[in-house]
Amino acid sequence: MNQVAEKKTVEQNGDVFSEVFQTDTLKTDNEKETAARSNMYALMADVFRYPDEAFRNFVRNGELVDGLTDIISALPFAYELTDKEKKALVFPENLSDDDVEAEFIRLFEAGPGDPPCPLIEGKYNKDANRRAIFEDLIRFYNNFGLSYKEGPQEDRPDHITYELEFMHYLAFLTLRAMQDEKETNGYFLAQKDFMEHHTVKWASSLAERMQGVVSEIAEPDAAVVFYVDLINILDRFITADFTYLKNTLAD
Image (cartoon, rainbow, N blue to C red; front, side, top):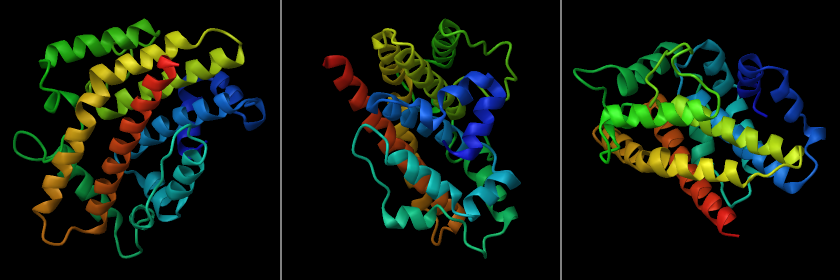
């Protein structure tokens, strides 16, 4: 499991996560594949947080690429990173910390009205209004014992990090059910339904928006290219994972 994601998961959810994800406890292919899916969602949630010093070092040292490569090798469906993406996912030495932070803020958080590429579902999901999206997300979270109201509420409930963390959690619950030899279909169905109502509805639109933003920049710097690639990687993963869930439930 990616070190940054693992530390966060254990801190937030207790020892049960670290015990379930110990390599020697993953006995079957299904368990290893479900752990990989959960890890991928956790890592994707991490990369769209504010790029603090620990994260910037994580990327500069090549640990992000290493973590992604390890996770992808265990996924239950075909998925790969291109050599170009791997290169773009390591910050070059001449890219300053200030540049990384400035581009993150400019792309995702700043701007008159909305930033160029907001990381919130309500700006992309045209099938529902903001209130309806919030209510549906909170119902999903509450149904699985998670309370947005009692949490830190650092972002809106439809922020990309919350939605990806929730998918990470659902996959974890699936893995724990497998290890306890309990029924898993309900958890797979919950993941499919959540994606169908939320992440699938806006991941591709987010990627298209980001592509439009970068197309207007004559010479995008390494930080911009980094986030363009991350969003494309996320979009491909969500599409592939949704197909996997549909096929799993159809079997």
